Length: 311
Image (cartoon, rainbow, N blue to C red; front, side):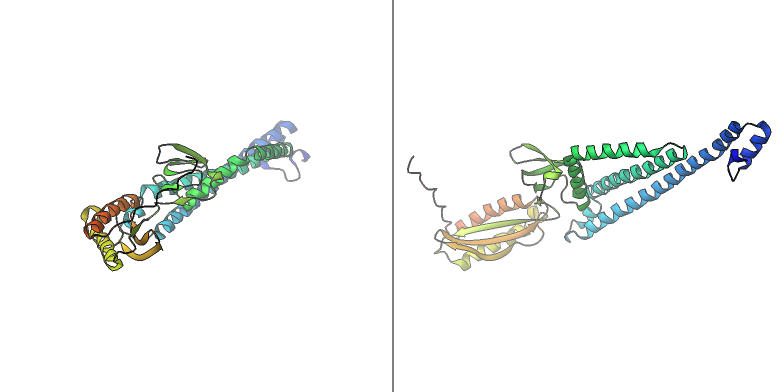
């Protein structure tokens, strides 16, 4: 029974008894046991992949829920809870992590199947290792971009429609992929910035924004009157139905911000809906100009630029 090994199987024994051929007995034994093991490996890999996919989806859902809970409590929270952006981000993160997990699971399963087929994995693994090292050296920047893009999505640093300062450029995000971020600046120029080159990102429109107005009045102006006018203009804007839905509260008069020979600067701030701060600032400036002018409070002119003696 050396043909069928020290622990012969039933199929090997029966085939050897019937045919008397060791080759036939070994072939039948291989056909019975090896395919069964291969099928078991495939089924196990499928189950592990399904479990990992559910785990990844649950992690992505918890990440999305944590981002929603951490949002500033505004009237738009209900919409944020089911926003397409949050859903798309969770779906993208789930797809990316799911693809990585599936590749790892089925790669291991494939190696196990090759081992069952008595294929020597040593040269294969050695060749794969050399190729991996070469690819790693040649694609360091690409791997860095992909990892940075993954963390951008997971942490929700910015998304489509946000106004972001990424260092090389500032503009409105038009597309975010794992490799790069595309944004358009105020001049209409489209910038393609690799994610790995973004060392810091200033999001000017995430969850809420802030309108900040500095109003400079003459040094001889009555500050009490000026502050009252600035505060009343902010309150009137908050009461205006056309603008109230863009504000997240009543504008706050902070008081004197700066004092120099050109005048006294007063500061007014108010939180706004994302990316609404510029429109609110323009409207506040228009109303402040009219209000101060009606009260007879002058706004000093800016000092002229220095003259170049060579001109």
